[in-house]
Every structure is written in structure tokens, then in C-alpha cells.
Length: 445
Image (cartoon, rainbow, N blue to C red; front, side, top):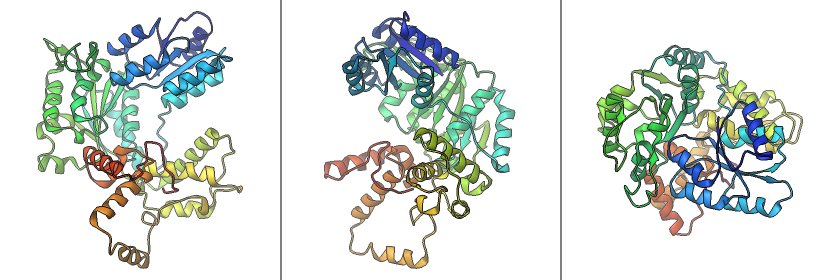
């Protein structure tokens, strides 16, 4: 993990940096906010920024948001400085770390805020075969296309490939092609020069340069617009990029791993994805089977998530009852591992006994095997409602199911992220409540 400290390394914040180093983080330092921003613009990259609370935290976060530099920020300050702590959190800092620093607290923040745990938990032979193939091809520089349904763990597998490659000590940089608006994605990937467009307040290196000598993950590449696909093809062929507003090409050396939850052959046949780019990326295809096709993973993943969320919530991890295990094995898991994780998180919070029983595992009827009679009643319940009303209910319910995650909801609904955004903007304008990312007010799986 890459940690950028903004502020003087003298004294207690320096101690925090040393603790992070001892926990395996790569630590860089900038004396002030402008120096820190320059380091990020210049492609140094960071998974977490730690800033001295005596500096202008609000100004840093405003600049990061304005320049679309996505990185979590935590503030550090003396434990008695309550007002500064509150102001930092209000400004957008994810956490406040009191000084002098606690080694355990630093470790917890590094893990929780930067999400540094990327272990692939598995037992089923089907997943073992995928990992074996990934290990065999990781040592090459060949482009890899990872396919599989939403929630199967495609980004985790990409990180596994990077960790097993000779580029493991260099950066792993991920870009979600579905989550970034089309008009901004080119700048995000290739960077820009100062003044190249409105809002380009300084020269900034893009993700290709940030991932130089490392690995660049193009997540959900099938959502990328055709015009940008052509520019990605040139990068793959020529190993060089053109910054927006730049005067000459820049050589880059990044191993490309792309993911998609769609059938890429169908996307190519329909003209939505360039066939030449597909063949360039698909040198090796790692296909992750859905959770329903690797039943041996269900129990071990469930136990892993129970332990994870029990620890996070300060409660003892409870075993699954035999009836709960049976319920999990017979569920279809259309949301794959992510759906199982959400279900176990809720179960940990809801169970009050000494075992996790089926009553605490909340799965929607539609996803857990609705009877024919229930389906018939459900169909009758739609009579009298307009198509737009039913569509709105389906979209908002799916968004709740995905805890507000727009990308995952769009994948389940089979629509583009742009279409989903337009729908949600329409619903908000009409006065309907739309869940924000990480938010759900109903107990659905």
C-alpha cells in the first residue's frame, strides 16, 4: 500500500509514518498541500493520504475533488484538538487519528480505509483451476481479459495476477471504466496538460503513466465508448499515450488487465466493442465461474465474511447452523460473492443467539426460489401499474440490493451506467428517494 503523508515528518506524525512503514506500507512525504498535490498529479500515486490537521484539510479535499483525484484522506492531530478533528471530518476526511499514534489504530486505518485485504478465499476445484491458470500466465507481460458475472471477484483476480508477476513491486492501478463519465475518462487514463480544457488547473499524469512498470486494470472495459476504445488500441500496439493538450507522445510500460461481466463475443458481434481491441486484450482469458457453479466455496466464504464483520463490529464470530448452511447451498446467488458477503454482514448484525440461524440470513424471495404460486401472485400484483412505475420500482429496488452501488446495479439490470444515471436523475427530480452508495434502508440481499 502507498501512503502519502502531507505535513512535517518531525515529531508524532513522523512516528505515524514509521508505524505505517513497519506494517508494510510504502511511505512518501510532502511538506505542504501544494507539494502533495503535485506528487499526485505527477503520477506518484497513493492509496491513502495522511495530512497534518494543522494544514487546510478542506482545501486539500476540495482540490482533490476538483481535479478528480480519487484517494481517501485521513487527518492526524493531537488528541485534545477536538475542533480540528470535527472540522476535518466535516471537510471530507474519512478518519481522524489522534496523536501520539497507536500502532494498532494506524494498522486498522490502513486496512479499513485503503481496503488493503485482497486475499482470494476458495476451496472449490473450479476456482482452484482459475488461480492455477492465473499463476502460470502472471510472469509474462501478455494482456489478460478476466470475465465473469458481477460480484465474482474479477478485481481480486487482477490483483492476484499482479502480485504473482515480476511487476509486483511496482504500482497496481485500477480504473473503473463504467463509473467515470465518458467525457472525463480520457483525461483520467491519459492525463492532461495545464489549460488543456476548463478545469485543467495543472498538468496531471494519467493512469497509464501512474501504472508505469506496473499493472493497469481497466475494469468493466466493455462499458467504454468506441472512440476511446480506438485510443486504447493504439496504446496497446505502440506502448505510448498522448496527454490531452500535449505536443508529443509519451512512452509507457504498463501491463494491461481488463475485466468485463458481459459476453465479449456478443459485444463484438453487435458492434459495441472493437474486434481488433478485443483480440489484443484477450491474449489470455481468465473466466471466473459464478458462485452457483463452485458450491465448495460457499461455506468457506461465508465463514470468512462472518469472521470479518464480527471483528469489525466487536462481536464474537458465530458458527452457521446446519439449516443455515443448507439455505446458503440452495440459494441461486445471482449477485455472486458480493451478495453472499452482504448477506453474512447482515446476519452478523441481526443474530442474537449462539448460532447464525436462517432467520438472520435475509434473502429476497425473488432470488431465493419463489414458488409458482408466489410468482403468479406477483404477476397479478403488477396489473394496473404503468410500465414506467414498474421500471422505477425495479431500478430502485435493485439499487437497494446493491447498497447504492450504481455500477453493480447497472450490471444486474443489464443497462449502461449512463442510462442508470439518467434514470436516477429523473427519479430524484420527481421527488423519489434514491439510495446513495453504501446506503440501504431495507433488509434485502
